[in-house]
Image: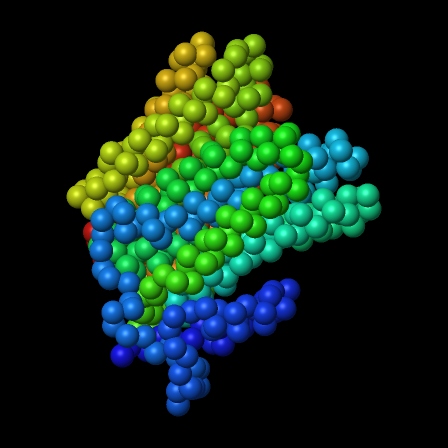
Length: 442
């Protein structure tokens, strides 16, 4: 028999989630097929896990997708209200545009704050717990969204409940996505880290791409409450699937202090943040850029980017294992640079369309390529914390680029924002080159 520390009693959740924790603990104990033993001399109760109940090490695509599917569920829940809530808060509830924007951005703040907690849970108590908490938090977000619709006649109460829903969704994002990625890596083996991260990225973008139009369709047909109901259904089913799924043992070893993990991962995170400016600019300002040129087809622009992104991840998923993270990252950043240069000088929508596809193709492997190198610097027992810290830099990039790029546009025009992004990506390319040389010298 193998023993896995019981995650439900070994790590205390943040105070706002304590009532949910107290309710879910006996429920998970009742539903989980593993038997709970008495406390060990070390103090924490342990699951009595037969060897056959542990996840079998497999690295085929089907096995990996069974774990990254939880990320798909999380980002589907995120995508469903994404295109709805700003207009709902501003036009239907009558609040200012600032508060409408706050409803969206507060989720990213919650994700940013909770990522370190998600990483520590995944490393020290198991990725399964992180996924369970993530699915539970997303389910609560759906319940709160439904409640906000129910009290819409009390605008400030409804708005406050919406904020609570977004906070829960942000926490669910960090727990669910971090846990799903580490669960997949632990089951497939550290040598398949790049594949798991790549599949997880496809799940992430796929969930957002499906969720946004589906949410608009539901809201237009049945009202905002239907979005809350679908969120509850998706995340509750995912919770039930996760609770029956075989766990993986926590990797033994020394857990580095959080500040040490940050110190080792930060250079890769900064390179990721700079390299991601191109995507952030495209996602935020492409519609306004097209409008400034009196062009049609901004939606096709984003489709070209997304299709090239997913295609490159699926076709070249083994490139990182074969050539290494730094070489792949540098080639991809170079391709992104060419795409942004073409966008800056684009004189027709077809040229912009081609540049978008080239940018998406290059951007596809930047995250997993640098991520593999970042995780390798901290050891297997600290992978979850490293992934959470690394991903925070992408969150910060997406959150900060909007106002900075907006200031650039205000001063120099819409096309200039692509030149700004190009300079950031070239800086990321330089950092990747320096990191590669420093690793060789070590």
